[in-house]
Length: 207
Ligand code: ZN
Image (cartoon, rainbow, N blue to C red; front, top):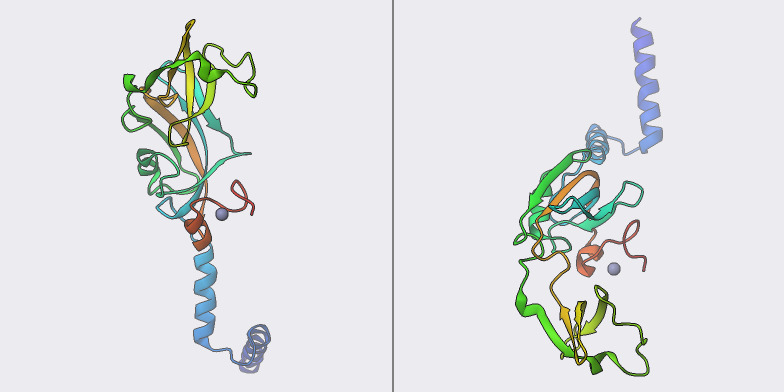
C-alpha cells in the first residue's frame, strides 16, 4: 500500500512537472488554479464594460420604437455616454442572464418636446440641382445642418407655399420609454475601445 501511494505520488508529480515545466511549485499551481477560476467569474454590468443586450423599447401607446434580438444584440460600452445615462444606471450591477424591465421619463430619456426646436424655413432651402424634387414629404426625416455645419435631422411637419415647418426635436422627445430585455454578455472593455469610445469586434467597429 505504502509503495503504491509513493508511486502514485511520483506519477502525479511527474505529470505536473511535464505540464508546467521543472520550475513547478505549489505556489504556481495555486496561481494557475486562481487564474482559471477568474476566467470563469461572470462580469457584471458596470462602467467601462462591454455589454450585449437584447431589448425592446416601447412607448406609452404600445408602439415598439426600437428593438434588438439575441441574434443581433445591442453591444455598447457601459458608462461612457454611448447610451442614455439613466439607461446605464438601470443596468448597473446586473449579471449575465438577468432580465430587466423599467421605464424612463421623457426627461431621463430624450428630453421634453421643445417648441423652440420647431423652425420655419424658406422653401428655397429645399431647392437646388442636387436636391431631389420630391424631397418635401410630410413626416419625412431630412438630414440637415445648422449654421456651424453640425448634422441634425429634422422632420417635415408642415409644407406651405413659401415656407416649410420643421421639427428638430429628437423623434422620441416627450416620450416615456419602456425597456424590457436581458443581459447576454459582459466583458471588460479594452484600452483601445475606451480610447475610441466604441466597441471593437463583434457587434462593433472593425478597423
Ligand atoms: Zn475604434
